Length: 428
Image (cartoon, rainbow, N blue to C red):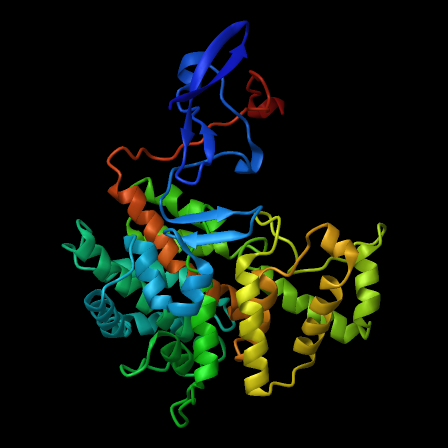
């Protein structure tokens, strides 16, 4: 059944088509509004604007639902892995055993960086932020692609995705090593995805880091839960850049830059900074919670609530369980993690937060997990980027595969000066 929306402007009536998604989401299609009426819509921050149709990820913020290609995130977290979920997100279906083995082999074969790229790490200043290095080096990767490597089919995309997903992990670990003045550690070909990253992060030439199964499992889960999350700031940026027909590497490098912002990828960093503040100030959790609830206080509770989810963030439920298991198994004694647990318990038992549906989100528990396995705070956003890479690749693919794609070009409502006379330099 076809639905339309009728609007009235300047005494004239216009009909606009209504688009309905597979989960009954409805949108008024305004793509012809300006050509028919001379008007555009204004939606600061795009809070009510659908920028595209997409078949990758479904979110119902009211019900706390997240699905990759229709599969609930809870099922993937319980039964799948990051690499398998990445394939699902990129190609639209779960991989067969053959697909899985081939993709894993490609990830392994592409884990090492070209020797000439390793020299670039020496050119960055000491203590350069790993996100700056990550973005620059992803762009550099495109320079090492052969001219004939243009992506024309799924096989070509699989090779490019494997190169990007594998090398971004190596770049991330190398950027950390460069920032602390330690030599770059080469990947191992007998380790799985998460294990290899932890090996490259923490091993030394004279001492191999022993990767515990618990740490590898927790990191694998962290990456899986961050693989995609619909049209957020960084993903929308990837699509924007991709619409200009920029290559996969340039588009994903732009995603890294968008993710770097503290209001996006830096949320779990803010959680740790809050916990550190509570610890250093000596205030107890009960008093801190009272400050948060006070109308005249600017104290904020970081890692609670979500712009999209008006209920529990489904990822936070999964990560809470993983965090509890990890801390119990590793016997980690960290005062900040103790404060985190106390803070979560206090908020979840307080009517103030329950009534406002301010529950711990994924950033609250991801920060505690990353800290528990030894990831430094300045690498938290980098970890987010590694996890989100499959979603960026999948969204680039949707733009690339759609023959009707036009370059993204939002409109604006101009609020500057009207026609202004130029003043000669001698009269100013």
